Image 1 (cartoon, rainbow, N blue to C red):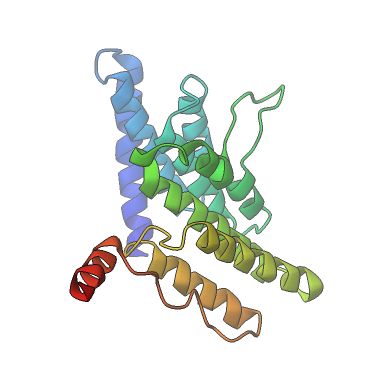
Image 2: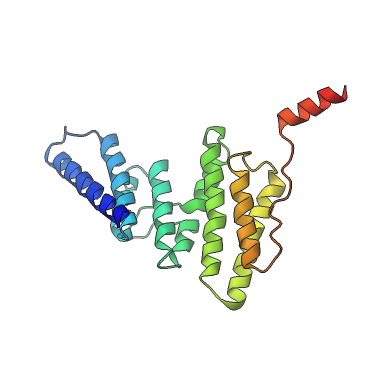
Length: 215
């Protein structure tokens, strides 16, 4: 109840700011308006008003389709929506392509990861996007039953295990424990032994220290 009250009060404040900006073009810069729209979208999504949240994000992406913060907020909105409508987890993962009626391209976590993987400065956001793909896949599987659930859990586990083979560090101390815990959760849900990722690889510092002590 306290969270709902906070979201409502904050949303009302953001709406007033945007209304004032509409009346006075000099009241807020375009960048400031976009920031407020994203904050408003997160509040509306927190209130369960996911369609309204997406309208705020689409207003940004319609003219600035590569705005990372807006694309992340859209994926987060679909993921939160998935808690009450599991089909939305697929949109959180795969995005929503443009249509003749709505030309806004929402990337989803998958496309975010693909676009960011070549850029070291976005390494943390890339790790987050890959993690959220696995997390949404797990949540989608848990909303199903029978073979669909079993296959979905296997797919979610494979996503993490494949990433670990490609990059054993998985982002080091910040992200690897999160991937490990999620994999254990998936393994338990699938009735498997929760082995997780196993022992983490030695860091560069540990490897250097071991080499020095050997000398």
